[in-house]
Length: 231
Image 1 (tube, one colour):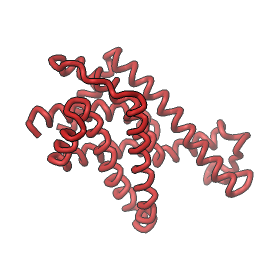
Image 2 (cartoon, one colour):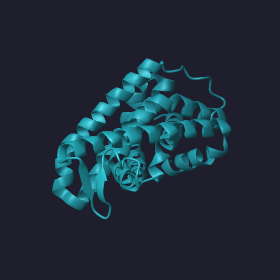
Image 3 (cartoon, rainbow, N blue to C red):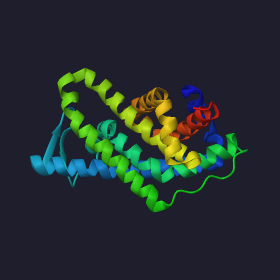
Image 4 (cartoon, rainbow, N blue to C red):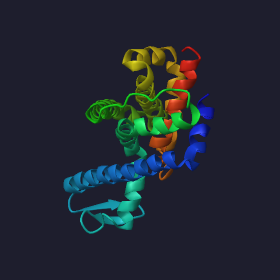
C-alpha cells in the first residue's frame, strides 16, 4: 500500500495542477530552509565569534560568506536535520492544494472537500511544528548517546510524528478530526511505517526538498486506501 501510494504520487508530476503546487511547495521549502539555516548560522557564529571553522571548508564568516561555498555546504548538511520541521511547516499550508489535485485525478467520484481556513491551517502547522521541535530537543540526548544508532532513533521518532501529522491532516478533510483520529489509531503501524519511509529521504540533501509535497500526496492516497477498506 505505502509504495503504491508513493509511486502514484510520483506519477502525477506530469499533471500541470499538481506540478504547480509542487513548484510552489519547493520554492517555499527552499525559502524556509535558507531562513532556518541563516538563523542557525547566525547563532553559532555569534556564540563562537565572527567566524566559524568547518572541516574541509575552512573559515566561514557570517556576512561575507553566507552565500558562499562554505555556507552552501553547511546548508546541505543542516538540511539533514532541519528538513523535518520544514516539512511539518509546509504540510498544513499546502495539503489542501495537494489533496485536491490528487483527488481530481484519482478520486473524481468524490465531492469537493471543505477548505481548511488559512488561520486554522497556520495554527495546526505551528502546533505540529512545536511538538516536533520539542520531541527532537528531548531526543538529542539519545542521538548523542547512541551515536550511529541515533539516526535510527531520529527516523523512528520523526517518522511517527510526521506520519501522524500528515495522515491526520489528510483524513480530517473528509471524515473530520474524530474520524481521522479513530482511523489513525486503527492503522497506527502502517502510518508510522509510511512516516519513517518519508523521514529517511528527508535526511538526503537535495532529494529532501521534494519530499514535503510528495509526502502529502502519498498520505492522501494512504488515507483513501485505508478509508475504503473500512479502517
